Image 1 (cartoon, rainbow, N blue to C red):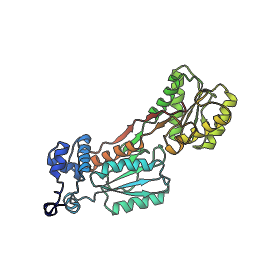
Image 2: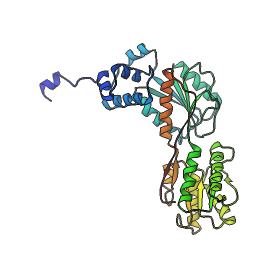
Image 3: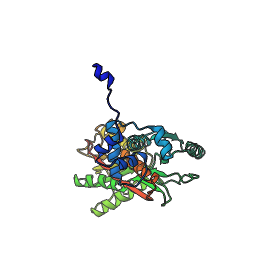
Image 4: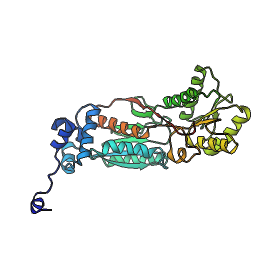
Length: 339
């Protein structure tokens, strides 16, 4: 380092630099980063991306006093394991972090009393908004006592249509799986899924039967196999289906744990996957899908995108432009060796 370098350190990145990179005015950049003003979500995201790329460091104390905000968002989850809430949280942080908004994570462990406690705690910290998520896609009752704090429900939509929710396109995901199996020549398709009272199991089962009927096919085994979200259930159900329908040539499973149990059973009983029988799972949980033999073709719920969209909707609501209703995020078919 030269003497000149020591006297003239690198200039601090300014709001003008962020605005120039994003291709917007300084005023628009300021509003996007402060969460104020109305603008297209794409414009806001472009500014946030530019700020992150330049490692823009705003004066936190000054902007808090100016905007009257805490620059924190609460995330309440019922998913203690983190299987579903962690990807949602990461997606939300991608959208919020560039604007230097911190996320306070609260795990209710499915306890209503703990949930009410966390709501009051977050309100006491004057959070700018709240994202609520969980481990199931079933609609849930809205939080009580929010006092007008903007709230978005991610993955588990609110039962109140006036609330803002972001959900996975469950029916679209089932369609991808069934159409994939039919297009690959499978005609004797069985469906093994979780508990019948779970919304995800109900939706996927209903659409599976509808799609098969539209293709002139019947569900193999005569009925949907409702049970647990477990490998053990996958093993038991696979053997039950094959006893009544030995010519089954495909299994569409309600999650990857069930699918792994099915694949293990088929291999142990001498069936080649996918040559004899194809297997498709749901969730794209790497721990299960990649460890299965063979690795599972599965449906990715796009949980990170659900979190990102929820965060952007929350920012819009903080701006005063809340749009009620449920917005769905498309699923993706992830092709692997099992089909």
